Image (cartoon, rainbow, N blue to C red; front, side, top):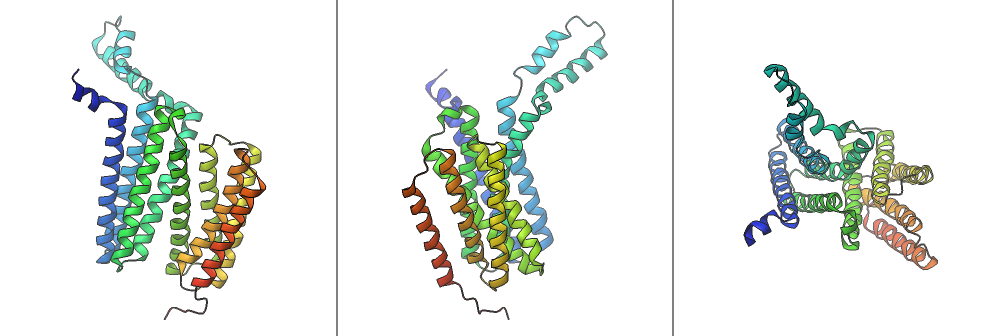
Length: 316
């Protein structure tokens, strides 16, 4: 094998290729959605959004599939039925057995559970970006910022997934910090988008509160899964944090009138503070100094939100 063939066949090169393909396709998808919402073609916008989401699911499934598939299932199935003399039944059985071996891992509940957890953050990032594009149909700058941020953050998530599936020990602190950042920005996108959608369709406060609780739970639970710390006690703490976000959502819905960005930031700030505390306890790095630092950051963001939000503004 030549030097260049070795470089192309290396895991690092394959990982770069996988991430770049996904980033390019999803970014093009966001640009198409931006164009469709700009000309107010909502049915086409919705159809395109679900089409590109289907691509994202299939693509991430492929990464998961290539890691857990049974190697050489076709060859092993042919050897297993080599003694069979009936041609039709032989080939039929070979195909059925090879197919069953190929996707055998999906019969494991543990594998299904792992798979669903890895889909949570990409889904929230994707739909958060789509909603932000939808809510800003005539703001080219905001749509471009949403498209770029969404595509880059999805690339970070897929890079993490591919790294984990190759070797969990190779996930360094830098990648973990990037994933934490992706989660924080995802929470900002999805909470802001949720509030904007509730206002856009004139939905009651209960929809926003319930949506906030569910999204906060999913975001913190998938982080708990990444830390390999899923147990009854930690899940209960995540549920309490989600309820705290839901309580904050009720307050935001009551007092916010126009700016759904700062409303989403308030919810993201509450979740960030709560999850930071949980992460410190789980990693056994909890100290009074770190707690004070997080409290100060939380207070600073709250004051920033209150100072930049006009609570007397009204639409129309």
